Amino acid sequence: MTDHLKSLLVGGALICGSSAHAVELEVTHWWTSGGEAAAVAKFADAWNATGNTWVDGAIAGSGGTARPIIISRILGGDPMAATQLNHGRQAEELIEAGLLLDLTDVAEAGGWADIVNPSSLLDSCTLDGKIYCVPVNIHSAQWMWLSHAAYEKAGVPVPTDWNEFVASAAKLQEADILPLAMGQQGWQQNLAFGALTIAVAGTDAWRAVTVNKDADVAAGPEFKAVFEAAANARELARGSNVQDWNQATNMVITGSAGAQLMGDWAQGEFAVAEQVEGTDYSCLPGLGLNDVLDTGGDAFYFPVNDDPEITAAQKELAALLISPEVQVSFNLAKGSLPVRGDIDMSAANGCMQKGLDILADGGVLPSGDQSLSADTQTQIEDLMAQFWSGDMSAADAQESYADLIRKAD
Image (cartoon, rainbow, N blue to C red):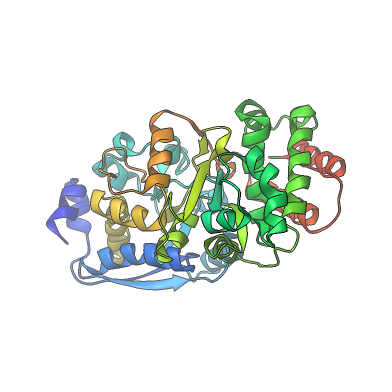
């Protein structure tokens, strides 16, 4: 083990229990786009540099595709050593079944309670007073990404908020440019709906519905305006026939679409394409209308293993993932914000700096993963897929949505 990791694991028992020689750990995740692959390589390189071996278990597709595979392996007795999940409620049943490693000793040795910002991220890794995951980044969904090339071709200024974007759509269409790129998957469409909720209805209405499960607000006038905005966005995205989110991002990068509603992980794709924020593309947190971000993101969980050497290595990896140097290198590549509030992110681009400023100002909300169960999230995503792909009216979609919120757990 390196001296740096020994300093992280200041507890003597942890140090003595760490791996005595090289250990291979299989790590599963769903980071497979160009930007995501570049980011996860930072983790792998750091782990390999300790003399251990990162066995990459990338699962193609979104989290919705990967999570059932991950959970099935753990339940079926074929666990990986570590796996990505979103911190929140996705792992509750696995924890309750005793299938995930308790990391409380690692967290206490590393002082995670003092460095994780916001503290809600660590709270989302905690159940019954014990910590079961290490949060590695903060991802926010409320962003609009705009192509400067598309707007130059259309002959209109790059919008500075959602309303200006809607007003510019006709000029984009006249220039044979699709206004809004949208992947044809329920989670992407639900993400866009959530971003519109923050921008159009505001944070109080969003919190009432997502956090407090207030079905009356979901059925009320604030959300009526959101569903009407979503119906308008659906029309602006007609003809966006790509499936994956990074394919939609590429439409913005190439100028074939004017904009995309997508989380801050889109920055990784712009980076791989060597595009420059402010020159080639613009980013608008809160769609330019409300400077707030949800604090979702990714965390790593470690399935229980009966080999003490593997267990020690799992804890060593957990400490490494949240170490200062790894937090900087990974998040700069990923486009996400670090979970540590005590590191230098001056190398971050303009989009990340906007996010860091919002975080510093306290303009954060919990993510849907932290507030809604995986089952409720899936039902909402199914509704959004039906709404975005067809001709369901805004009123009918709102009625169905309010019913889901009423039954939410």
